[in-house]
Each structure stands twice: as structure tokens, then as C-alpha cells.
Image (cartoon, rainbow, N blue to C red; front, side, top):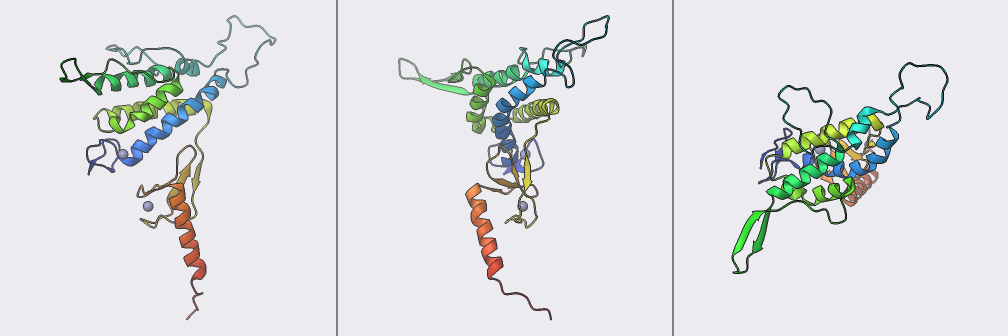
Length: 237
Ligand SMILES: [Zn+2]
Ligand SMILES: [Zn+2]
């Protein structure tokens, strides 16, 4: 076990990210495509009539939410060098996820044999999402390569950038995954920290990071309930 480079937990051997941080990324990749329609809705600022209106203005109002527009627009996958710190705004969603996919693909060793039968190991030429190049396609690609990504030291930067992107998107769409605290205590640490989060599979203890698959939680809850209902009532002494 080694230290997670993102949080204070420990990571499995050979990984730079712990199970919890890896689950974060998997959940964000799954959530991101669902946030896009909401972000398009957020393009029109709240309370603004779609058209018309009375009264005079000397300048035309900006009809769109520029923060949402920036995230949905095209852009450079890697921020340009900014010696004067005069560029602003985040990297747009599609540029960020496709940029990471191409970076990962370039780093990922491609193994092939040449015509003499000699094994050649060289970087991939680039990433290719199987079905297309939408944000959802790139998120599927990043999910598939996650077992490789967590073994690379740049996973901390990747986690930070995707976390920042999700925070910006949720600020605009006001859509945050639903969290539900489970009734049973954690089987490992005993704390009431088991939580189910919308879009994530199973339940996770927020205290000790124990993760239970849905069927594991169901079986565990049935065991606890059975033991509880079978126990004789304690008599006051
Ligand atoms: Zn971690
Ligand atoms: Zn626990």
C-alpha cells in the first residue's frame, strides 16, 4: 500500500490514487454527459424573457450566460502558456476530456510486432473513441482507461481538473447528485457513515471508505435485522 496522491487515504500497490478517489472519477465521467442538457438550459440566464420587452437601453443585453457558454464551447485542450496571467476562464468540457484522452493515449504504450516479428513498443498515435467524439464518448473512453490512469503520477492533476470542472458545472446547473445516509452502521468501523450517492453503484462509508455492492449491503442489512429481531429483550436490572 502507498499514499494516495490526492487524499490522505492509502492507495493499492502500483496506484497513485486510492479506491475512493478512483470512484470519484468514475462517477464524474458517468455524470458529465447528463449535466450537458442542464448546462444548455443554463445558457439563458434565469428570469430573462426569451424575447421582447419594453423600455429602452442604450446597449443590447448579453443574452447568454457566458460561464455556461465558455464550458460548452470549443477550445484548447491544454491551457496556453500564460506568463502575464491575463487569460481567464476554464477549459471547455469537450476540449478537457478529449485532451486528456489524447494525452493518456500518447503515454499508453502500444505494443505491436513488425514484419520481422520483433516486438515494438511505442506510444499510441492518439485516442480514438469507438463510437464518436462526443463528451459521452470521451467519458466512456476515460472510464475504460481508468485502471491505467490511476497508475500514473499525473492522476492527481487529472482528478483536480475534473473535480474543478464538475464544481463549475454544478454551480451553473444546480444539479448535484442525491446523497442518502443509510440506516445501518458500517460493518467495518461501526460509524453511521454508509452513504448512497446518485449515479454511483453501491454504498460507501464516509468514515473508513468501506465500499459495499448493493447486494452486499442488502445481505448485511438482512443479517443485522435478523439478529436484532431474534435477540431477547433485555430486562432492566
Ligand atoms: Zn484518495
Ligand atoms: Zn466505516
